[in-house]
Length: 103
Image (cartoon, rainbow, N blue to C red; front, side, top):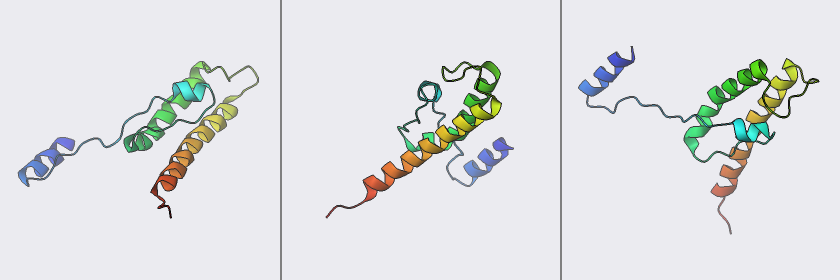
């Protein structure tokens, strides 16, 4: 299907389809229970699949230092979800802050 679209775009002299997101590595900050700081916009769109990968890795392996015997699957899910949301909110706040014109 993608090949068909690429061929059609080439025939019409339009730019080819390309991946517009980058998968950030969330393990280091999330293992420290810290939000991820995006270095480029493309990572913002890759945070969802990376977040899912991190979540399922922690559910299956329980490798993060913050996961002890008292943390169940729901606690892992809640923590990872909160970290993804906080990462996105921090990005939004920085973007809004940087886009404000000063007097």
